[in-house]
Amino acid sequence: MKSLRHVGLGVAAAVASFLVAPLLLRQAKPPAPLGPLDLPEGAIDPAVWGRKFPFQFDAYKRPAAEEPRWREKRGHAYSLKDRDESERDDDPRWIRVLAGRPKERPLPGGCLECHAAGGFRGLDSYFVARLRVDRPVACIDCHDPKTLQLRLTRPAFSDTSKATPQQMRAWVCSQCHVEYYLDPGTRLVMRPWSKGLRVEQIEAYYDEIRFSDWKHSETGAAVLKAQHPQFEMWNQGIHARSGVACADCHMPYLRQGALRLSDHQARSPLDNLERACLPCHAFPPEEMKARIRIIQDRTAALLSRALDALLALLDEIKAARASGVAEQRLEAALHFQRRAQWRLDFVHADRSKGFHAPQEAARILSEAIDYARQGQLAAARNRGQASMR
Ligand code: HEC
Ligand code: HEC
Ligand code: HEC
Ligand code: HEC
Ligand code: HEC
Image 1 (cartoon, rainbow, N blue to C red):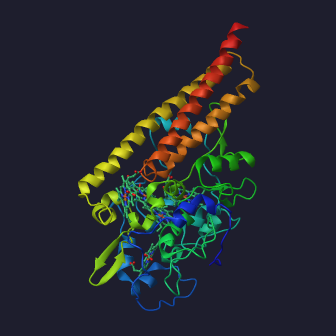
Image 2: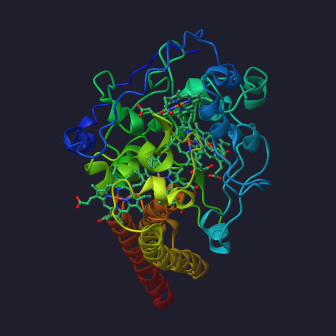
Image 3: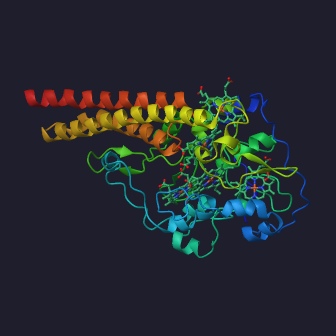
């Protein structure tokens, strides 16, 4: 087990709103005293914890779907098994957006930093590393085995030593539910946060280190892949500003006799609206569901337009090249493709379909549409000139 590691990245300002937000609502008190836990540091087997805390253990084990297929959400107890299986499919338009994206082969051991209990950090390949880890995300990834306090064992976006209990209810998730990239040399898992957590700040960092995930096979553009930036998106929304943490919606409190416990089946709040939303919003579950759906439908409509705009850009770049436009004259269009694609994917990969920060999602998608159309114009202008020659 690694020692506690804090990486001060100087982006505290980006989350200052959360730091100072009034934590009016349901100020989290430390969990009800349940006696010292006193497990050793290497206690990764959740069943051992489960002997003392069967309630949390049973919920943690419960899959979100009984006979899940790959695409379905299963939760933390499946984070390792699912990784040994396959890739996901999607809207057919994504196949073109992601054209030529290579499979990670050999799989880097770094994948197990977030997919295995206790994490893994090192240079070994996935298959070598996999022999050393045999448990999915578990109790030890969020809790100190001695005291049961929430703690972080993976690199954090900021110094967490002064974090309040309520902040820890989000920061503990920021160990894994964040954008990352693989260092091209070592293939170690890295966080791109030194300029901040917003989509354009991460992009600026990637531009500075000249990073790209792969070369798009239709156009040759050096493009980026976004991975589950849930923490980054949530951080831009009204809930984060109001001090509402991930656990409030995804692991809501419930009463068990006199005790106030947390639902350890981390899952979609849509399956649990009564507990996830009603403590703060005085509306029936159907109304809360409708509010989620309205945000998600609007985001989906904008995302669909952004996808169409990006595909139009791909078509235009190909047409320009076919009509003899010189490569260096296509540079601007390729750069716009990188920018549009990054934004589109950032919203998509958050997977809340806009809910974590509706206005931010709309802002990002509008920029994606604008960049895609600017790129299309740039390529078309060159094509026009090429055909006049
Ligand atoms: C920084 C932590 C982290 C690292 C490193 C990481 N993952 Fe994940 N991965 C997650 C989290 C969190 C989820 C679930 C959240 C989601 O899917 O939105 C996930 C989900 C997935 C999924 C299912 C959802 C999807 O997006 O298709 C696949 C496949 C996956 N990871 C593969 C990998 C592979 C392969 C690697 C190594 C190259 C890797 N992961 C490295 C945190 C990580
Ligand atoms: C050690 C890494 C890690 C930590 C810490 C972590 N998660 Fe996850 N989480 C994952 C991975 C990996 C998955 C994907 C599991 C799978 O394969 O389906 C996941 C899945 C989920 C899912 C279900 C959606 C899905 O794709 O399966 C939710 C909801 C979720 N996590 C919420 C949270 C919340 C809330 C926190 C903080 C309290 C948190 N997670 C902390 C790694 C982590
Ligand atoms: C105010 C409530 C709320 C907060 C706070 C919140 N989420 Fe969510 N989250 C949602 C909703 C609603 C969805 C959409 C679920 C759906 O469509 O099934 C979602 C979707 C997700 C998903 C995809 C889950 C799935 O089943 O597809 C993950 C993973 C996730 N959130 C993680 C997080 C993390 C990590 C944080 C904190 C950094 C966070 N959420 C904060 C409400 C919240
Ligand atoms: C993804 C992170 C995560 C994982 C994994 C996890 N917990 Fe928790 N746990 C939490 C959070 C968040 C709380 C709420 C803490 C708070 O409000 O201060 C919590 C609270 C608790 C509490 C205090 C009572 C309660 O329910 O609020 C117990 C006991 C507990 N967890 C046991 C476990 C056990 C046992 C496991 C493994 C089977 C486990 N936890 C796995 C995040 C996690
Ligand atoms: C811990 C309290 C808390 C929980 C839990 C919570 N919310 Fe909120 N929600 C708030 C606060 C505070 C605001 C900001 C409203 C204000 O300040 O008037 C807000 C705002 C909203 C908004 C307006 C968003 C915007 O961008 O303007 C929606 C929609 C919403 N919540 C839906 C939900 C849903 C759906 C859930 C359950 C999945 C949920 N909330 C859970 C406290 C909470």
